[in-house]
Image 1 (cartoon, helix red, strand yellow):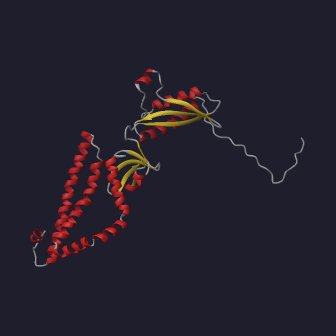
Image 2 (cartoon, helix red, strand yellow):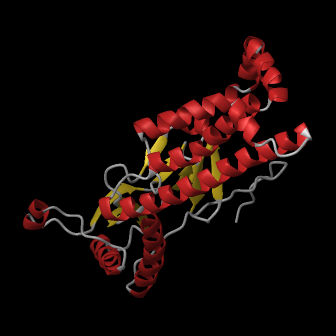
Image 3 (cartoon, helix red, strand yellow):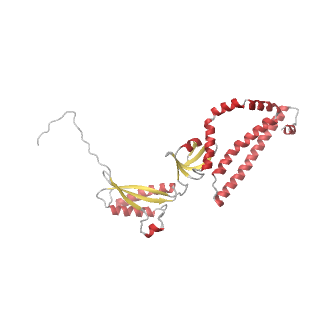
Length: 296
């Protein structure tokens, strides 16, 4: 490190030489990071498209690289500049005290880092997966860095969830094996309406939708299983409740399909005389004082 210091002995002012040395080391670190991140981005993009490589671990490595490179650059600066070397040695000599203070103050930060490493190793989800965290946060995983996981929800908002929180919660991953979604769509018809006609309308409207997919196996097709299964689920207080099972490719398409089918089925029900009932309530008003009943 003394040789490095001597190479930057340009002027008679030692503080100016130190400043030039520190700025040069930081500039080299910045350029090194820029080149490495560019190479990683190109490799990540090519691998994801051509080889179907999981990009999660490379994204995490890219995010962790900045911390490591600047930490190494800081150590080099302290060891290269004589005026800072004594300060660095003093810091290392009292490392026990600083470690205790730093560990107490940074428990959450270290917890997020360790949790992020575990997320990359055990892969409960990957970049690009659609997940739901604790039945509250729902969206597509965009990034996993040292502190948090970035999720883009279906309203195009970014949710930054600390790694320690997301690793401790229940995670629903819609892409971990099969991204197809089976929608359970509920319909209520009146007791006077024809159940078979209502089932036929629901099946026809579901199969006409652009996001509907036929998920039947060859055995189910051969046995005559209908493409859309509609079952009479229960007898409600004011309606006969039907439940349709409709498949889509992913959660976002399933949501749009469900909303569209609600609309088209209601329109068909109205045209073909299938009533959608609503609860009726009888309200009885009692007088403050009992009034005698007058005979007619």
